[in-house]
Image 1 (spheres, rainbow, N blue to C red):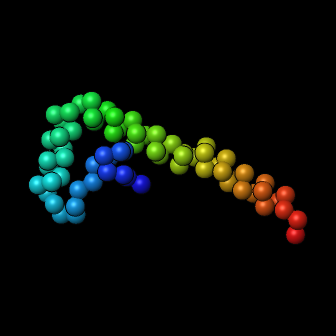
Image 2: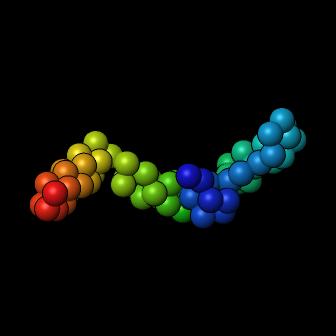
Length: 68
């Protein structure tokens, strides 16, 4: 999920001028571009194959440990 100004920039659908302005903003502000990029990478880490597999294993172990 993208959160505006946290891990990306959101623009309205079909708002080409605002999209172009967002691109220009990122081109002209490399520090902000790096900050948003780092935050975006961090926010998707939880969806990596390894993390997803670990979460599934944890869930299965919890379900198996419950008494039926």
